[in-house]
Image (cartoon, rainbow over all chains, first blue to last red; front, side, top):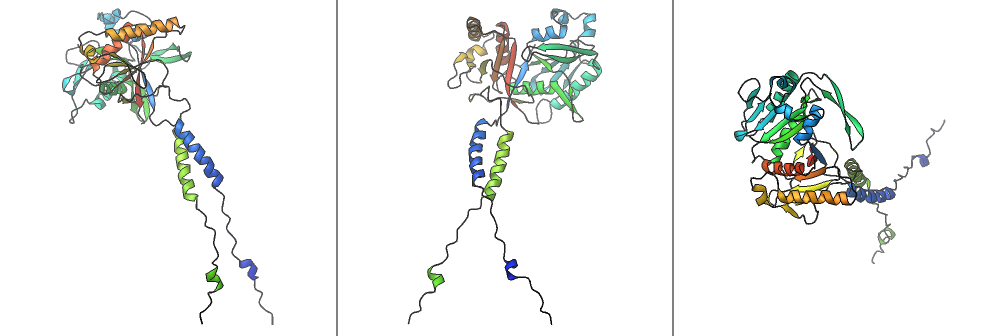
Length: 208
Length: 163
């Protein structure tokens, strides 16, 4: 009779677990973390560029005089949109085009939201509608030299010469944050996950 | 007769205790990744003033070094000195009807002349740190004064909104 073969008892000995020595990695971490903490940027600051009216007008006119723009004759009305946003009392936004001040297609008011604040969402929609219907598609491209980067910045040109420009006026008591919010709305509108340019050149003017 | 204590009780084997560093490693890795993400290679060119509550906006223009002004709610316009900002235009001046601030105008002219004397090319650049609660009329006065003294490139410092 054959004896059943059994595996040796030695083979069933549990294998000793080898632990990874993490101490050098920990040392590295202890050095890296304070170093990165010192160069970390928790509040990201940025700059909001502002172009004073005279300079913006020069750019829009290709170096021309701003007086022509405000002369208001019939020929100029066709070439300048003269878009103006006025932040008034009672959180009402007035939108004016072509220098109109009589209520109608080119001058209207956007009432406040029920919570009692400027209706910036409606303003964004309104500006997008103006961009589509009054400014239209770009007619060409122009470029301007950025003196800092020494690079040419290309931008669209439109049938209205100030097709990228909006003037903002507000009551003297309105806080700066509200102005910034309105400037943000004027700049871009997100349509189907794509940022469409509206009026990135904002001019701050005195409330009349 | 008393029993002699067994050898194992008398000399218990001392097992070496090892600290488990795995959970700490996990934590460190997460912290490291977070810090790497928020690391800035450009460094802080502009220090946000402790006297101001800056507004937030969706802009990504990188900060640059230029002549800097602080516009506060209580003390008008101040020179940007990190430890102790010097007041340039008092609140009384800001509340006056004039659209140009004489003290600020004098300061800006002085700075421009200083730059010209020291051979630094004058680019007309100015950075304004303005409190979010500052009134629009104050802001316009500061902008007008800057424009009047040939500082035509005005940038406002804002806190970048993450969308």
